[in-house]
Amino acid sequence: MSKKLYVPDRILGKKVINPTSSPISKGFGKNAEPNKNEDDPSKLDASLLDRLPQPTGYRILVIPYYPKEKTKGFYRSDDYGETWKKMSDYQVVDSQYYVEIFPDPHQFDKVYSVDMRSYVTEDGGETFERIPENKKHVDSHDVLFDPDDPDYIMISCDGGIYESFDRMKTWRFIDNLPIIQLYRVGIDNQKPFYNVYGGTQDNDSFGGPSRTKNRSGIRNSDWFVTTGGDGFQVRVDPTDPNILYTMSQYAGIMRYDKSNGEKIGIQPQPAEGEAALRWNWDAPLVISPHNSDRLYFAANFLFQSDDNGDSWKKISPDLTRNEDRNKMKVMGKVWSVDAIFKNVFTSPLGTIVALDESKLKQGLLVVGTDDGLVRISRDNGNTWEKYENFPGVPKKAYVTDVITSKHDVNTIYVSFNYHKYGDFKPYLIVTKDGGRTWKSISSNIPENNFVWTVVEDHINMFFLLELSLEWIFQWTREVHGGSLIKFLLSL
Image (cartoon, rainbow, N blue to C red; front, top):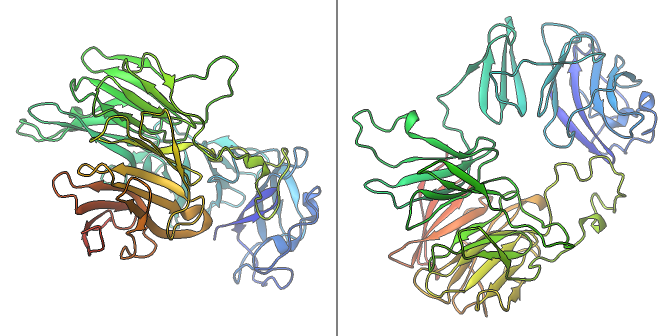
């Protein structure tokens, strides 16, 4: 049984180790009040824990607890949470990110704590040792045990699934699961076969051939890494397939020359005296379809380079709402600067997340922001129009993509996401008059399938390819109000 309970100033990850046969009978429930003894964990209210199932055995609970500097640590209770004992000062990298704790069913007081780096205690939390991960990917999330084999353990992580049959002395990577997550994909104009590129979650950016003349087919050795970290967009010079623009998280952009292996960092920097730039985790980059030496790259400002990234100039004001997240309410109140983990591993706010230049008109630029704005410039950034009210779209919804039409200079598609507010509906709109009016075209997309991006067919403008999470590909016929055809499901 595993739960996380979110309470102001702390997050409790709860695990039950061999609980007793007596059901808990007081102080539990969905409407439990926040703990009133936050400075004394030994007096944690029982109301912090949901009602436990009918238990058997010992009644031991363990939690990582992070309210204040002096009381943070790992706590153990042997009376259903009525009282707590601090076992150690152990804490994880970020308790609100993905930490979980897992008691070993074969050994009392042995508990695994999975996090960016994972640890195990065999004395109820007094001491922790890092688990061997020299042949295993980090960033672990879940643990499974074999009830009949104390030597076996399986751990899922950002690199996939690993299992060990010898108490983690060695690891077996399960390599036949097609579960890698690609943030972005791209192609080049290499001949005779073009290459496909992708940026993967926590596993680099890479490229490989779309076809091969090798009788064995495309091999693992045909693929190559373009940059490390969390991989994102890979853009390739349309006139020279050896020149790649590849990046890691928060705009760690490199220009990579495949012909000689040269890699040069080309990230734009703020001018002297200017505030730091706000980059999104997945910062948008485009190569101008009108000039292959021209790049557009977006933080909270839009930058332009005419020399392949050797130099940059700012061509916009701050295109976001530029709101101070520290003045925004979370759980009904504005939290002070010393709130625990307030700004640790939290998404930035006020960044440009979507970007496109029209293929029909040079300098017609469209950007979308993470705080719900669409901006349009018709003169390569000299002036900007702001759009923020769209039919059927929640205010300040995250703009997942902006797409200019390949066939009509006045047609622009915009997709939105509102899942951070518990809304998984698809939001897709179009303008056919350059932004003067907008129309929703998502009414016949199934509920709870939010739109990630759209691609307009390069021959017929009345066909769109729409990508969401649940249904990977969909053809939308006659965007002006026609039907929807699903033709490929995700696994």
